[in-house]
Structure formats: structure tokens, C-alpha cells
Image (tube, rainbow over all chains, first blue to last red; front, side):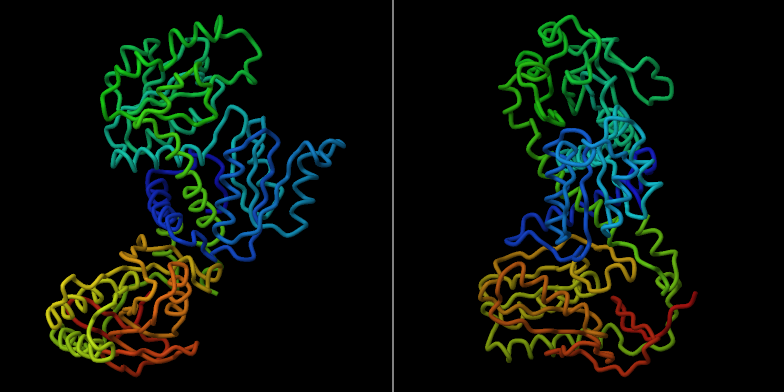
Length: 307
Length: 190
């Protein structure tokens, strides 16, 4: 595998393989010295055209735990301010001798484009409304870790599906791994066309919650909402927020997940986020191991075979 | 993806064809018992001894050795047995496909323990070199010793075994296969 651009490119075997590899890196994270020399001499660049804390820090932690060198490119302090194009930026970075680029951009497809311009491995760190593959890998890994397997599990994804790259990648990963997915959202927050999505749709969260093994909440993305899609955040919370009352409808071993950052009091009640079944901290912890597995697979597991 | 590609791609693909059987299952068992006695003799008992099998071939042998040690010395607590995967420490990363086979499991603190590394075949010594690096990330053992079922020569680093099941002279291109039913010498056929 040369690049990780989308979950759509992977099949169930690939996902299982990445999960199996992640197990090994979870163990590395539990050692007295959680660092291995695997990627010595390799350089990983994070090229983030959009704000991020956890994804960027998670990738950098993953790279450092594998002894790679990391460079961070942040748009606000770079030549992009002077009008440099993405292509020129990528070619400049590549000329410095790097092995992997983690790209985040507000437009869908930019990681594909970057992959055309560089010989380094490209990892999609989130592109527009399209995909966020490593998030889907860590989400499915966390569910597998807690519930054993995704086969036959019922997962509700609740909230702003329309603007969510996490939802797109998660739907693909969860269904490829054998889970049943129900999207729960007001019609204005669903994509206009759901043809070909292997999902059920509901507008009634109270009816869905008792039946699910996982309740996956999405963030209300105020920065992507250019139009008035919900009357107010309070009304959204009243109908689709995981309030204390709603959370009590979940079965006792159902998981509550959120990709972060959470808007406490909007899509999830502050108190519910502290429940033992809320696994947001596991998600972040597993995120580092999953990204180590991805970097390992792209940069170390293959070489010039047969030489 | 890598795991499947590795199985299919030469020179790591191909099928092992045995030419001669050099040890039977009984021979392996006898060697295990002799090596267990040697480990006890060297360490004046089994206090503070831990066995660590290298993935994947060394893991069943480490368990067999531990069973033998437990029977001979009957310590109060069974001897701790772990497993170690050295994929992340290999020096040929980027030269050939490398993937870990299993999750490493070190069952106890290794500080001030005598760690006996166990592997099926000692060849270039590079796996053991990687295993020594891996161990140092878990702590500082009092001593590290090496037990192997087959020493086939062709060392590329200055490493020697402490306990050997059988010394087996080989050509570099031959393949040694250690299984539950014995040890075979043969080659990979594409």
C-alpha cells in the first residue's frame, strides 16, 4: 500500500489487517519506554490547511514513537500567506527529502491531487466533507476492542451527517466490517442523495437508541454551516442531543462515541460524556496506535522486494 | 496489502519442500530436557529465570522448555514465559516486507531477571540482535541467555547461543523447518 486516501479503497481484509497491526502498537504504548526504532531516518510532514489539534498531535506522536522525524507545516505562518499554491508547497517540501505527508484540507480530493505530485506516501488527514480514514480506523478499532467484533452490531450515527467526513468514512468502515448502520439526523443535515449508502435513516432518536450497540455522535460543525439548517442549537439539542434522559434509553453495555472536539451541552450532555460507557478517551488513545499502524504499513512493511 | 503480498511475492513466497528429516519429535523432546537441565545448571536453579520465545517459532519451544523446567525443579510459582515480536526492531526494514506476527507479551518486570531468549533456528543472528534491542525497552535484565533448537551457522553478527538442541551444518540457500513433528532440512520451491 502506497497511500491511505480513503476507506473506499480498502476491503474488509485490509481493515482486519490494520486492526491486527494496531494491537501490536497498543502494546508498544504500554511499555516502560513506548518507543520503537522502526522508522529511524524517515521524515513525516503534517501539511494542515485546516485547524486540528487531535489529528495532528496524534500523527506526530505516532511518528515520534516510531523514531521518525516530524515536520509541521501550519498555513498561518507559512508561504501560503504569500500566495503559494498547494502544488508548489508540496514540491518544495518534497525537495527537502521526506517520506510521508499527512494532508488536511477543506476541499475534497486534495490528498489525491497531492499524491500525483509527490513520490512520498500521502495520508488523508481529512478532506472537506469527503473522508477521514484514520478516524474511521480508530473508531472501528475502539468498537472491536470493546465489543469484540463489529459483525451484526447496530451502530447509530447521529447529527450533522451532511458536512461530516467522519460519517462518510465511518459508514464505509463499519459496514465493510459487518455492522448495520442507522443515520439519525434532521432531513436538512442529511446529504441530499443517499442512493448507494448501505444505511438505514431515521429522524427519531428516541426510537433508535434502545436498539443500538453504539451511539456515535457527530459534532455540530458551526464553521461549515453557511446556511440555517437547524432553527437553533437549543432546538437541535431538544430533538437530537444525547441528554441524560435519552442516554438512559441506551442498553447498559452500549458505547457512546464522539470524534471530538465535543460541544458539551449541544450534541451531548456534559454529564453523559463522563459515563463509563463513553469511550472518547479510548478513541484518542487508540488513535495514536492506529496511526502508528498506518505509518508502519506505508513506510516500513514493504521494500524493494526481490532485490 | 502487505501481508497477502508477502505470501505471494518471491523470494518469500514459494513452498517449502523437505529433503531430509534431521530430528524427530522425540529427538526434539530429548533436546528440550537436556537444555532444561543445562539452564538449571548454569543458573543454579530457576530462581529469577524467565523464558521469552521469539515469534513465531520460538514461542512453542519456550513453553515446552518452561514445562520441563517446572517438572525438574518444581518451583513455587511456575516459570514466567513471554513472547517477543521483533518486527519493529529489524535492521532490514525497507529492504524486504516486514510485519509483526503477533503482539508481544512480557509477563513480568524483567529488571534483575535472567531472561532466556528461545528461538527455533539461529542463522544470521540478526533476529537475536533485534530481540536484544527490544528487551532493553522493557528494562535491564540481570543477564540474557540464548537457547535455540537448531544452530545452522552463517552468523553475520557476533552472537552465540548458550544452549543448543543440535548443530546443523547447512548451505545458505537451504531452509530449516522446525515443526511439532520434527526438524526438516530442505528448500523453498517457487
